[in-house]
Image (cartoon, rainbow, N blue to C red; front, side):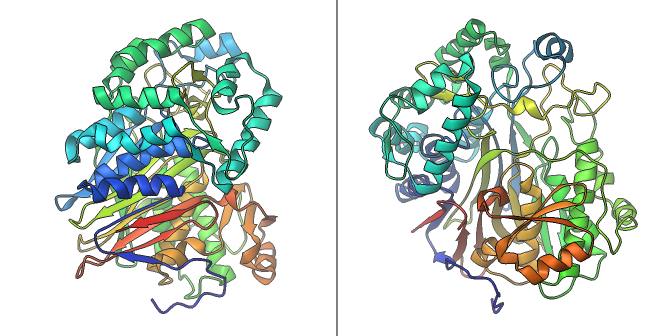
Amino acid sequence: MTYNPDFPTVRRPVYARRGMVATSQPLAAQAGLRVLQEGGNAVDAAIATAAALTVVEPTSNGIGGDLFALVWAGGELHGLNASGAAPAALSLDALHGRHAGEMPRHGWTPVTVPGAVRGWADLHARFGRLDFAQVLAPAIAYAAEGYPLSPVLAANWARATQIYRRLNLPEMDEWFRTFAPDGFTPRPGALWRSEGHARTLRDIAATQGRSFYEGDLAARIDAHARAGGGLLRADDLAAHRSEWVTPIHTDHAGHRVYEIPPNGQGVAALIALNVLRGQPLPERRDDPLGLHLQIEAMKRGFHDAHAFVADPRHTPVDVTHLLSEANAQAHRARLGERAHDPQTRAPSTGGTVYLAAADDGGQMVSLIQSNYMGFGSGVVVPGTGVALHNRGHNFHTDPAHPNALAPGKRPYHTIIPGFLGRTDGTPVGPFGVMGGFMQPQGHLQVVLNTVTHGMNPQQALDAPRWQWLDGTRIEVEASLGADLTRELIRLGHSVTLQTDPGSFGRGQMIRRDPATGVLEGGTESRTDGHIAVW
């Protein structure tokens, strides 16, 4: 790449041939590399990294969360939706009886069935090479022996501890025993371990995840829910299944951008790309008109996603229409020289981990898992280390809305793995940007940085980001520059300068050279990002 950006790049792209694992926490990346060096493939490495992340970055994911993955294997791209549904007893009527119709952020009510563990097992059953217990061994060791906290992890942990102390909910008692025990202060270098987490991972490894859905772990979750007034039951866990899905895509600048179909929000990024395909984007990334068009196109993507994305098993989602040229043209007609209000609900925040993995056989994985809002619901199953997510908070409470809460229904999901290819069918590699509703916005920006502006993976991730909040409000990073910020204001955007880089998402990217097989990777400088290579 010859692009010479005006912003500082604090890292350089990393190159390797035998294998590569990129994620937001160094110890987790090393777990994936260890599995590759033991003879595993990219899927084995991805599972090892994902399991390790539940231990070494519990501030954003856990055993009690959901998972999505895109896997390039056998000359094609496979999609896995491992998100869980609302419990059979969780309905709009139940919500009205408990919380006057408002879905709380914390406690038992927003807990839906966790799908991550079954996702690991299903990925391994279809593509894995090593024994499942061998793949989970690094995560078990980190939990049993302990590890030192990295800097951004420690800051997020401390912030969550303060929030949970202010909430002071009885459902969080076990969270404090597990993640804030006496004598532990989350700071860089502080040691944390969880024997309960290690026991749970050993049980999952020995049973290929079955214990979590049908065995002892399922019984423990059920018992804790009954004791604490939760609605999740063993029958809900036993009924859960992952779903293999066909990835959706759109083409842009000679490349093919792939996402998971709804109930995920990846379609929002694809709609925005379609809208931009009919616009004359300036060559330079820092042109104010170009950024204005990106922001306006992203609003249109969210307009459709918030109106139509839901669980297609309950409500049909016409993805063909959403990705059609006719729909793109209709959205382009609403774009102008001034910022507009898309008249859709404001995004909220969330916490997620993302990883990319590749091996020397051409297999590549884009995987994302999450507890949604940081540690999730704040509910931890005693003695297990299982922190349950609060994904149910993303349901709509209007019964007429496609994403309305209903028993057995999966909610609108924020976490989206991405994959980049070429229009001739050649794979390029996995990418992703985690962080609630920042994710499709991050996908859009990283893709354009790569395919339009010619950046390498590290430059594409380091480039200054913007984030649409609601109406005409956006946040920008300081590195975007005062002149460019003033121009966006002149174009009608209500701009806030955000000094916290964590709010702009955290990404990873790997590209594979089709001629040599050489892997080129970038990792997120806004967090404890790391690439482990061989």
